[in-house]
Image 1 (cartoon, rainbow, N blue to C red):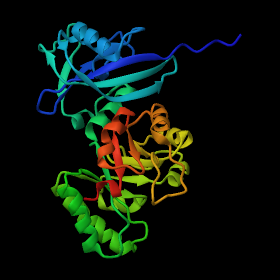
Image 2: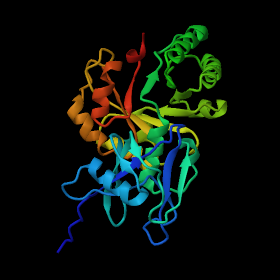
Image 3: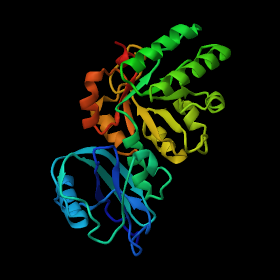
Image 4: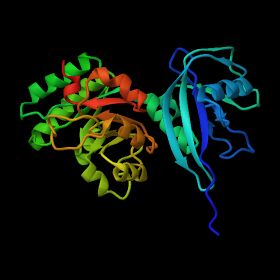
Length: 317
């Protein structure tokens, strides 16, 4: 007789901040699963219990604090050899008390980027990614061969406050693209922003850009992650197969769409928010909603589980 798989275990984790951007991590005890690794504190959601109620109970027991309001950050589905879990990460908006390791667990307050090299349970790693990424992912319009005009458009995005930018220049001459990417990197670094290049891995690595964004066709040809772990790897996805491939090769985040009909791709079938939410729930990494969106759609996107919204026209002023 075929053995039935155990039910998926739902777990909640709390993101506590100290007002200076540091987040709290707890070390798993010696006798625990993945002992010695560092995780966001929390625990199992009991049947019939909400994520907020579970987090309030767990953090009172583990840290001796009283949790008030929380808001969802990201939910991570993860398959261990012995069990399947969904980790629901929530930002703790307010709490009372000073966190202490009531179960003798070690605690550390760290900035999100300082956690990158810590040993962590695999489902906690995408939480760090979500904490490091902004709510908006701005994509440049296809430029001509005028570097000055293209750079001015990037400067406009930076002046508008966007801090994650994809340089998309599929038809620009190679020498002009290198000049533009070099200048754009200087400007984004000065603004404290991150610059990803569309498709061109070799140029991005040669110039030391912050990462690369793959088209879905590029993604599906890969057998492994093509970029070092200290650089962002993003990809465009449209369905379950592409999301599964993105997880397989270890992307950091994706854009998923089109969510709504778009003038640029009039024949592409729109997912709609319900389908977007269902697909996003299968992804063990942050997902930006893309396609036919405006900045005012951010709340809707986040209710559907998105990290935020991505687009070209959405970020034009």
